[in-house]
Image (spheres, rainbow, N blue to C red):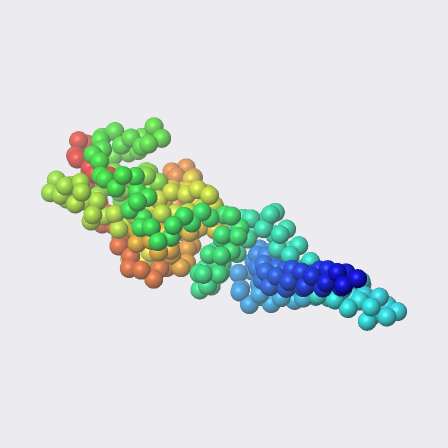
Length: 292
């Protein structure tokens, strides 16, 4: 006879624990998912947050009111909290499963709003960004970390195409996804290792969804040159600097599919190290060039 109350108590306790977890996890997840939807209309953080909170509270309240017994509301004790838990978890799961890119874009907006930690969590939940080891410096991501001689006359790229004879200043013709050229004036005086040490700090990793590429900083204002096929109109872009830190704000300035060039603008806590661009008109066929 005493086992039934004990079992009943365990069930009640388990129900309470599950409900508490659902409310604690489902609530923020639902709000972030709703903020992502509102973000399709406005980037204002207060508008996104305000509308999301109203909907997150009003929707389950409406459902709970419909489910409560009309003759004796006291019989529906526990129904409101159950409805809140189920609604919030349901909203969060649906948003994460069906709207990954939209949620990823919300992560970028939160980063731009000065909330990089929350934005990073949203990115991770959306599955749009593969962060890897954020403490790992970018040098390990650069193929081999060495510099190689290239034929300035041919200008061959990794995909078999050719580019005009130009220095890195001709960003529209360079393959920023894999390389950038050091000024030819210094290539005769410095070894490949010395050139790599000097200019590798200008290289950044560009993350878009589960893919990405590399780019390089071209001015002190945080402008980055990369490839259009890397960004491809993405709403959520992350930029990792050589020291392993992430840019706090990323803006897509320009894309040109025809010449496969894209320009980004970033803000970062770390110091930026732009490359010294060469003079495209001064490059001559047969000159030695170094690519990193």
